[in-house]
Image: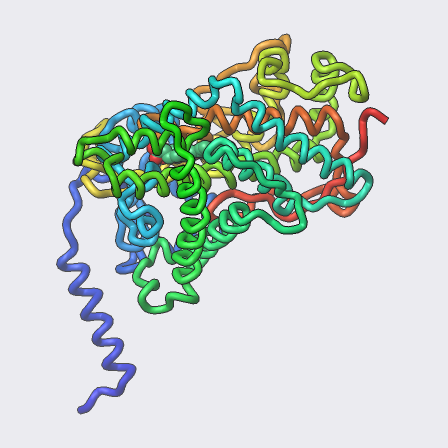
Length: 501
Ligand code: HEM
């Protein structure tokens, strides 16, 4: 009897599943347990529309270390801050995924998406140079304050009008980073948007799209549905940003004075010029490729994360007027009452402003914008507390679940309460070991200090000058995050009033 098409398809699929099941590689019995995966898609279908809740549910079911399969990739999820700190300090966990969608961005260069000698060399150099630039007289602080002044003007022009959260801080944050990297400053609030801002925005939109279509978990889609999956926009946006960065690099090369570096690109060019070791990641063309990759890494890692965190702070403070007023009283004590006699905050005021520090920690706790950090890859087999982690497996830190664990933070874990980061008399900031918004260990974020300085100066300046209230339709805003490449707020509006008048 001849088989019909659907019977043949069913037979073929069953046979395929059976072959996959029988030939699957047997895992070491100490490999972490987890929900049963399907062939090809793994556990992707079980993650659903509320991934953070699915991850939390699995942690309750399988414990602080469990495993899932993202497509065909073995992925270990860590949910306990003490275990995370111990594990991520070990070089064996410091690799990065070889996902072709992600590596299209950097092709073996830069910091974020590479491991091995290139990563070590580029990371060490970038940390050192960001610190050096921060110590120079034209400090990072003055560059941030330039942007703060522009932002205050925008707020001033909008007093009494509804202001949408959408892209409220992106221009100012990208400009801060661009000023540090290239020494150039653009009017981001000008009628014609600067190219660097436009292209960074395009790239971030493209990243959000590939997070939504699932391209990262099923890279094969780039060959089958390149447009729909977001692959075409993703690769185009990389090329477009590269063109803008290249123009700036060329103009820096033409004017380059190795004895007088002014910005990050100048420092990098001097390093390339002095490098005579062919195995170095600064050597000739390799150095040039790393320059582009590191500059774009700083943008991608630094701009949306900082801008989104400031947006979360706006939302929380507009919804929690009591905390906002406390913050303003503290600011008035140090900067003077808002108005003609007062001044802008500076980084040296920070130790005298513990409440703001506590507000920033609480925002980073409740809304860690990189909720699952950045995936790590096991560089070698590892045995750890009775578990076995094989070389090549991915490892994610569930920062969100650690930050929302009632056994660590107490029953009011979902409440915005900056006081949890203050001593009883309110004068000292408490550093909590389970607060990990920047990750930890060998791969910890290199921009933590810059991000905290930026967030501090932006919030202190805005809230000293303005009262920020919810727009009437947003009085009880929905605080649930929108999940994509980053945790974002749902759309909301605020109205600002001048405090000094
Ligand atoms: C609120 C702002 C920020 C947050 C929440 C944040 C968070 C993070 C996290 C969770 C990681 C992953 C750590 C890991 O792999 O375990 C990371 C990595 C990184 N961040 Fe940030 N970040 C922020 C701002 C910045 C800024 C301003 C810069 C640079 C100017 C930056 C540069 C980087 C780089 C280059 C990496 C990769 C480090 C590596 O792979 O070795 N970040 N960040």
